[in-house]
Image (tube, rainbow, N blue to C red; front, side, top):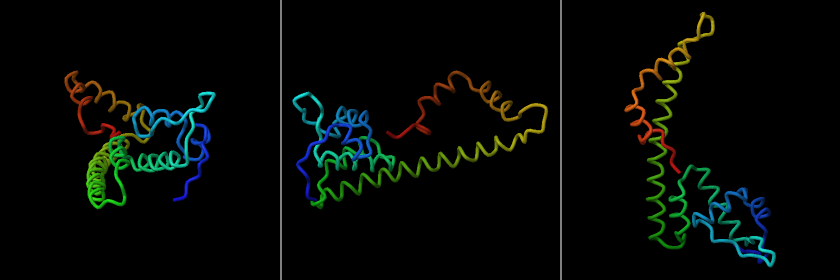
Amino acid sequence: MAQSLALHRIGEAARQSGVSAANIRYYEKEGLLLPGARSDNSYRLYSADDVHRLRFIRLCRAMDMSLDEVRTLLALDWGRKEDCHAACDTLDEHLQHVRTRLAELQALEADLLALRSRCDGTDEQCHIIEALHQRADAQAPDTLAALAGAAPGKRHV
């Protein structure tokens, strides 16, 4: 992988990597990317290696990997057998998360389809809205608090 020595300002690094400037700053803050060098006028500067790293991060995030999973993968060396095992373990854990989330989404789909089947728009009132209000009334405050802290439906970031 031959890398150019050219340095890019954050806007160009964003364009070349497909990662927004705001996300580049965020990834720096989170330690996924070392802070860019600074030019004489204090602009952040990024190398071709930095742009590659940003593309790697973007790819992993597009696969719904958490920042911790991305951080783990970034720390691995593709030339070390031990790191290959660590990469496999990270992907296996992520696959389990994806399978769990898929099951949650399938249950949500079934619930939404059942809700949708309650109304075809021809009655005097909307039975979907009616059902949603009934569900909202059935939710006791302690049930809502438990749902808010529950793992199902929680975003994996």
